[in-house]
Image (cartoon, rainbow, N blue to C red; front, top):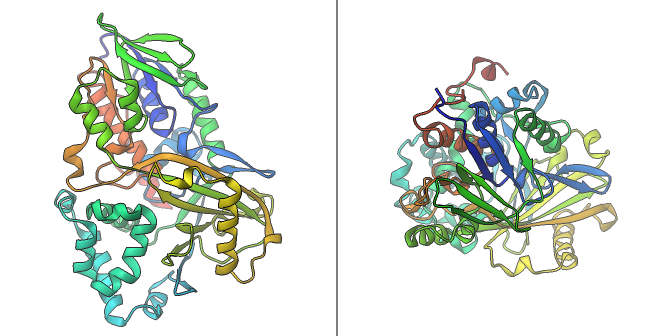
Length: 456
């Protein structure tokens, strides 16, 4: 039983903070959720692109994303998901190839038959591994080169690693690629014959609106446009949170869900070791362009790119997944570029980025012209994902900080997975169950795959 209703403050209103607030409110606590942006959602929020409102960054739900789908079911939205089988493209040597099935993989010209066998064997072997901790001790480049061979590594793996990690791939462990493969194989392990991609009509805007209303209905005090300046214990058993407008609120406990460098900045009383750990994590940021087009580029949801001259990481063509009626009859593409937080790309003008990106599209897709472009917007986020460097999990800052009543729970604590909404929800629920409500009544959170999840 809960001995005393507590006052909880949650700093950061992304999906992580929203889920923690949701579960704490269900457990009977008073919860305040503070977000610096004008609305909740964080990286999952939506924005306006011409006359279309859709996600600011690309997201997809998998059938095997059981934790996120459980949240959707609580919001009475899960049965309204649309499930689509999509295709995958590969742009290499100036050519666009389909890599959507085994036959196309075997026909893939850039690799020899032996190269393809070793690549397939690497992926299959990784999907069967369970001891991800051991992989944290091995550089990802060494591991992939040993399993796939030098040619496959140079032709396939290295361009993909650089696209996602930049030159930081040299510091990243093999656990990174294991986690990526593990997510894509999750459906097969749960008995599903194929993995399909899902989206919600109305996009994440609809989901976040429903989730925000759910929190309000549960009594959560939702504060937007409320940036946090300082978090520190008062010395009398409470924790004070001061916002940038100098408003101060005291709570029994506070959970920080923001990126680690920001936690270090607003919690100056953390120990020297904690500051070192938070600031020692290496983050990747993203500069992601959204482009609304009059027509399609290709038939692939994602086109992986191995050409070094292309200024973006991949082409994500949402109209191969989302019904065009959701997008005003247009085609929506995302052009992401993952970079370090101090990369000059963050300071480059929108006009310059648009010129370089659109010029690359013209070169990649001969049928594309600038007249096809309706709208172009750029999102910049400096701290998106923490790199899983060697021995990563041993270097993470503790969730329970040295400050009484202050907890640090952020996406960096996803040590054995990739950053996605499902893993974020799982992290939140694990933290609430195992740490935040230790010794008290716990909210009911998903523990196993519900039967109905597997009936699609």
